[in-house]
Length: 115
Length: 117
Image (cartoon, rainbow over all chains, first blue to last red):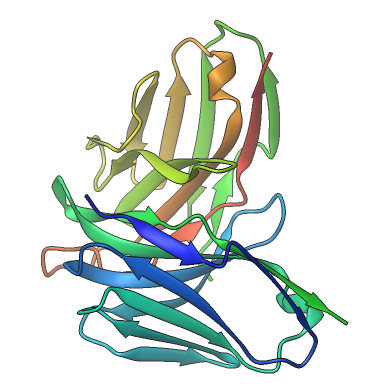
């Protein structure tokens, strides 16, 4: 059974710092990995999606990497800002019953960026 | 931009009531999903659908049913609401691009915070 773990559960950094969020998964047979952001009381916003054949994806100050063989992904945030404060969720798409697959989520890392 | 709209942000119902949560997407996506999110447990998949009138059970389908009569609309039904169904419910959709698997990002609505009293 696929399990996704995110470490740390919470992180507090000063503004301007570069930071890395970690995600690990137990079964390397994934189709893709997706990083989301969730603001308090809100839904999820998709940040980056890495296909299983890719090593990394970049969007602005965000860079996500994927090492499928070791079951790891990292989300790198450059020059953090207070507006980056949110919970960041990692999810992997694994086969589940039908052909469409199913996202398995980690429990998230709550990031606080102090001005 | 993809728009996934959930009909209510907050909902309060009583135990034993039949509850309907509605979700509509405007991007002609084949796949739609219902999750619940609870502190310490994360997001868990309740049901998903990859076509009109099709449905598949997720991890925690007990006490729930779904309906997909039109492509853009996916309804979650609590047959007889109980207090342990108090939760944040999130709907998502994604495009199916062939190849046997839906390798497209899931897009989420803002969620419905449901309280069962």
